[in-house]
Structure formats: structure tokens, C-alpha cells
Amino acid sequence: MSGNGILLTADRMLSPGLPVEVEIDWPVRRTDGAPLKLVVRGRIVRSEKNDVALAGVRISRYTFQTASRWIVAGNT
Image (cartoon, rainbow, N blue to C red; front, top):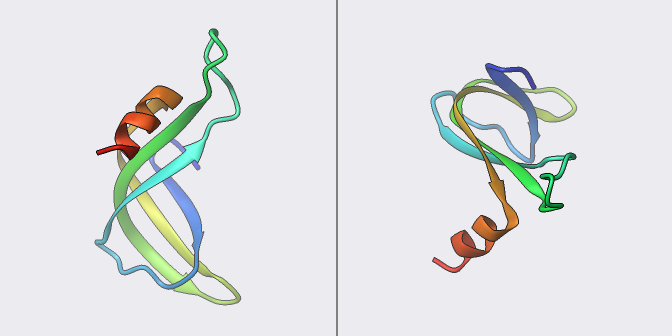
């Protein structure tokens, strides 16, 4: 992962141009102890398969969300 992109393993090949949203549990908590996750939106820019399927994602937008937002998002 870098500021511009992420290389992911996937269970299948993902087509270049496909929009994706990736959620990553963040290892650092807020000062109040609330867990965070990084939510990244972007597009697949490359995909290849050798032993595993790999997909390169160009990041277009990212946000950090707390557990309270996960619950709200899950109920909609």
C-alpha cells in the first residue's frame, strides 16, 4: 500500500477499470479507544494471475471510519 495505490490478492481475476471499495482494519485506535478502519475507493488498473490473482488499485479517495459508522452503514 502506498499513498496512490494498493496491490491486493483476490480469489479471482478482476478486470481493469472495475471500481472497487476496500476496507482495512487499521492497527491504531483513536485516542478514545475506538477502533478504526480505512475505507479506500478506486479502480483496478492491472490484474494478473500466477499462483494467486493479483490486482493493482489506484486510489481515488479514502476515509477513516469508526465502529459507530460501521453499525450505521450495516443497518441501511
